[in-house]
Each structure stands twice: as structure tokens, then as C-alpha cells.
Length: 89
Figure 1 (cartoon, rainbow, N blue to C red):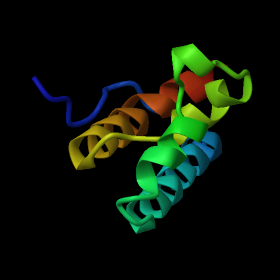
Figure 2: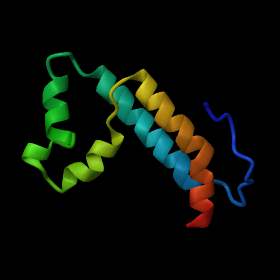
Figure 3: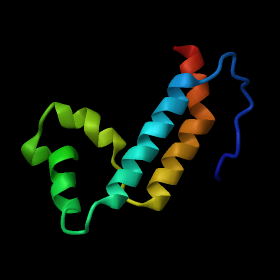
């Protein structure tokens, strides 16, 4: 079942949620703009690879997505539920 909305009203404008959605979208479009031969190297450097773990990849890997359905699904759920999490925090 795919949620369309939640029933908990937001008390504030979700600025952080919107910022994260915009940053993820920009990172996704940058990822799409890379040539096919350069994309695996980019993912190896900025993605979370357990064999070559770096603390910085914990942050950068949050902005990498594997395909259209992955990015759309993540941003959809972030849009629906992120405002409630932001209100609570």
C-alpha cells in the first residue's frame, strides 16, 4: 500500500525537509549527467563501500540513488513523513 498523505497536520513549514529533497534532487541530476564510464568511479568514491570505508561516505552516500524509482520513492516518503519528524525534533 502506497501512502498518499498523512493525517497528522504540520505545525511549521518543513524547511529542512524541503532542503533535503532539493539537495537529493540536485545530486541525482548530477549523477545522471555523468558519462557512463565515469559513474562507477564516482559511486566508488562517494558511495558507501564497506571494503573501503571512510567516515565522509556516511554523509555523501545519503545523496546517491540507484534509479528513478529509488529517488522518487525516497523523496515521496520524505515529503509525506519528513514534516512530522521535523516538527517533533
